[in-house]
Image 1 (tube, protein in one colour):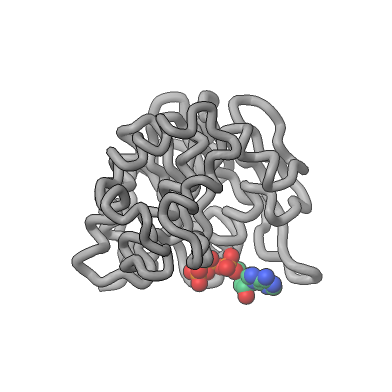
Image 2 (cartoon, protein in one colour; image 1 turned 90 degrees about the vertical axis):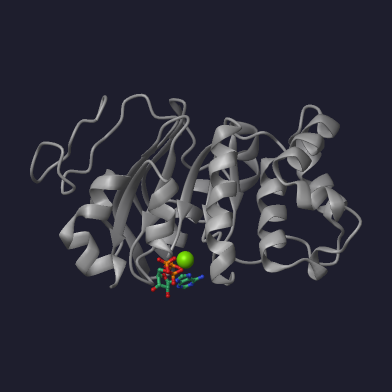
Length: 255
Ligand SMILES: Nc1ncnc2c1ncn2[C@@H]1O[C@H](COP(=O)(O)OP(=O)(O)OP(=O)(O)O)[C@@H](O)[C@H]1O
Ligand SMILES: [Mg+2]
């Protein structure tokens, strides 16, 4: 539980209280945003601590991708704050987030299909201190990419493309990587492997905030998770607690 401090509703270690963490690297408070007249998020809180894998899950249309966009500044905040290591990032544009230590892999269109693996990684080097060292680190993390460095991204398998998308976002060596549905569209046997890679990213020193629909497999690698429903925090808890909670199972885990 650490430095968790609960907000509203019932206190204690249950999943109803949305704990707040004082020493998080990434902290979002009371985030509201949407599109035009459509409000999608109604005051969402979220923390990611260094060395954590944090999972966000919930029904289609809950606002999970919208939350990621709000965190990385591709969507303006209507209210609330985003802080990174105590610095207020609210209102910064997406291109100002990378130097602040935030990497982002969107749900779709996350590689340049007509560029090779190497060229895709080059695009991530703009903010990298030592591009060649980072490239080697990425090939250590994802050896399959090294064998395919001259291959166009469009010709990679789904799993390889997802690795490339992660590698590209990791080139600047972010403190936290936001990944939206890394296992989407992958064959069942590749899903677990994707989460093994996510675990390796964390092992390499980058915290991970991940949105996923394959909740059971994602909870197996995650430390903690948030259930988002209709643009609000519904539950928060350690991965084991969420997985075992009947209400989470009934409502969000299927069978
Ligand atoms: N660019 C957009 N313009 C208008 N409305 C949008 C836009 N993107 C998303 N929405 C709407 O915002 C709501 C939340 O969408 P969002 O993509 O954040 O959900 P999600 O939880 O990521 O869903 P999924 O699990 O299907 O990926 C939905 O009602 C959606 O129709
Ligand atoms: Mg989504």
